[in-house]
Image 1 (cartoon, rainbow, N blue to C red):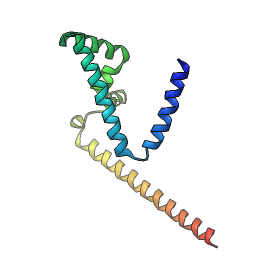
Image 2: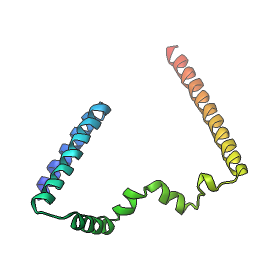
Image 3: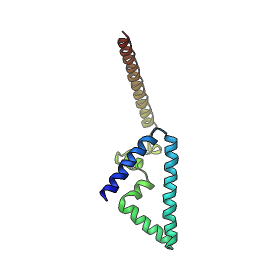
Image 4: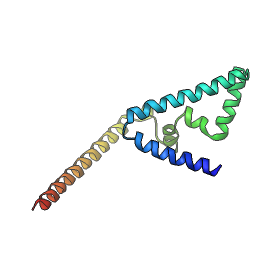
Length: 131
């Protein structure tokens, strides 16, 4: 069993490494894989005559046990904002929104300055290497 896992782990690394250079192809192949997987699950459920209610109950139990129910249906951004006690945009006061906008602009300006300094340093390094 360990050999099989190790084989697929290495295969995954190689395939992912090559496909990462072609993101559109990677997404297309990944999408096909996902659809075919769920098509198979759907057909197995049909083959064993599983009712809709049974599917919902079993699926819910599996998702709740693995912790994926909340993650998939609510999403991690909502959970993170709840942990950080962030307010929804509709709950924020106008002043809070303006303050956040100002902070974002300041951060953008700082980022632009850092980019300019890096570009300047790169130019100096290139000039130094040409001599």
